[in-house]
Length: 226
Image 1 (cartoon, rainbow, N blue to C red):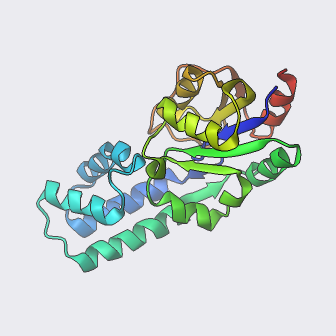
Image 2 (cartoon, one colour):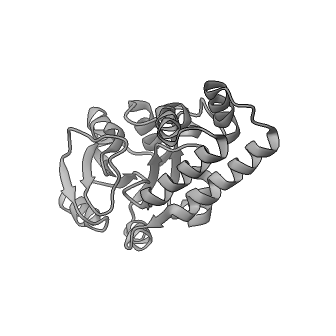
């Protein structure tokens, strides 16, 4: 019997306006006098270190960028760009229409829920702005946990916090970062959610047990599994 949901954040509950963010990255590159494509590629190449907390702030990331591109970036400019990075991230974020209603309904029906997200330090102010954290019984953000999907440990942390075994859980996500494969490897049934828009920046998963097109379909699915 399914008693808990482990749920991804980006492209599952929330999507980011990629065109808007791309424009902001180009603007940031212009502030730093760096070629936009080179800046964007370098930023993306450090995603894993941001996700696992090895890079723990935009200030630190800007320091790495400064060193790589030979820039002389003062503290005032770093602070300004760090503030703008959070503001632009928040501006780019949109909650899928049925997200909040479904999360409330899951708990109303007695299911326990955990947010399990590969995300950097700026996800915390974003989640506070979106007011999503109170809708979960547990929140495992990779940069705070020090481990990211598809590492088995992040799923185990979530299950431990909820108090359930793999066969009592469903993991729901778009499949980025091989997250569905990771859930499958620890014995959790993996549900791929396919909805528009979704990003392809962080790859996909090879495995899924079920596919849905709306988050609320996960509840009906859970109730068929005995």
